[in-house]
Image (tube, rainbow, N blue to C red; front, side):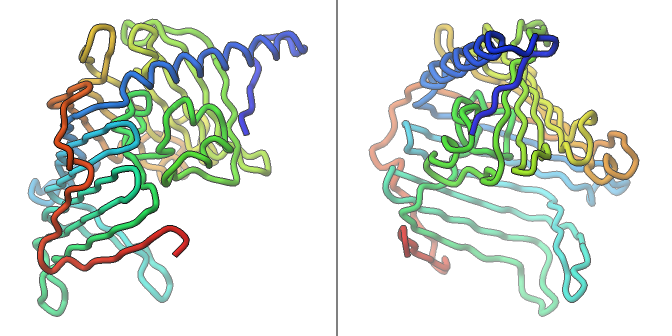
Length: 336
């Protein structure tokens, strides 16, 4: 459900509640209209992901570069991703489920295509380290399913600053609440036992843009705030967020877990804008909980190399996926 909060300082009576609800509803409708401008896209994104604090040995630093090609036509899309560098790997080891960490270098690839009916997936891992038995860590998997897949937020400019975190839905859908999010096709990575509390806080300038500052709280069914986001929606940038603060409210409601913002913009058609360069700084949740302070844990930089609105695409772009020999395949259909 969608819960509408009252503006700070407002008198708590029926008229104020109605005005607040109407203002939020109007904003959702404006966002939804702007989202429709970006239904057909082609873009190439490069991101650099680096872990902090940096290790003294340059060749042991956790850093990898991801290159992604994305094609979208309505609900159909294609995603091709290649990650290369040194990765942080962590797992819980039995029998005491101790958290163990190690790093490894190599290449990870992923391809996903969806034509509105069938989703095809391919992923491969090729790491330089070897197993204890001397065999290389190298494998590839394929998948075919009728289930609608997760669509990355990188093709949704209004959710762009959420990057690799959910929910994986349009911002207007997010603001409409639990029922609408749950009904959205595909995996959304949303807490189904939670509700949304949306609130227009005020109007504020950020990075030279006049913005509507919006609060979104994810609240458990027991009333506890699980997480909170603050968004600065830029009025002359199609109401796309120019900044996002995210809080793990059960750990701290004043120290952000992440701070994301758009560094530069590009006008991809007259009056239609898209982030060009953006970054995110993620703080250590452990340090927030333990010491009640910020400590940089990850920094991510995103750069859109190419973008095209309403591109002409090959007819088979949302169905073509050639699986290399040796790929381990799995086929799943709905209700199976």
